[in-house]
Length: 217
Image 1 (cartoon, rainbow, N blue to C red):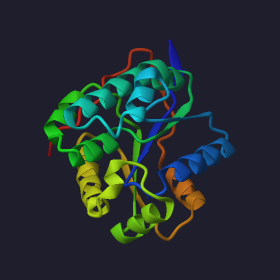
Image 2: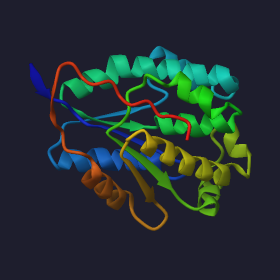
Image 3: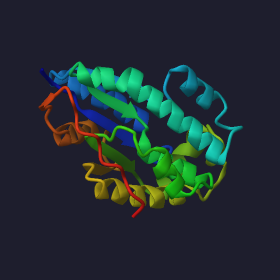
């Protein structure tokens, strides 16, 4: 039996770059184009995700990385995959790219993170939003720090560098990556450019091919 499988789109990027605003704009853009869209987020709204979000400031390093990965596998099994199988395009606010950046900032080696996430579902399009370190720092200062990473003035520049490395890692795993600078454009324009880049849904068999696992470049 065959079915039209939905597309899986993830949005990641440094804090203050406008991810959540862009996710909402993209959801509206796709719905306006007649796509069936499901919006989600990581950490997820399941029990593991809620626990992770509530204890983010108190659990560090490998322990936090394991919690994030556990939530992701649960998220894939119980929310993302069912929606994709039903033909929805799933738009996720933060996914694997955020793990490969934020957990490295927390001192976790990239190989450990790649091994931990070796069996996760890879996106059809991984969007990485970016801006200058100065602009990101201004936005974080204006809205106030929301987690312990925001207290480090060097974090924006380090995040941008790590996201550049992560983009290359994902591309090496044959993931389609779109990098968008949000500094001089509106969320709606960003959303339209993302929507144009999403691969069209394709008809696939019920037995899907396992995704390629990213490797440490």
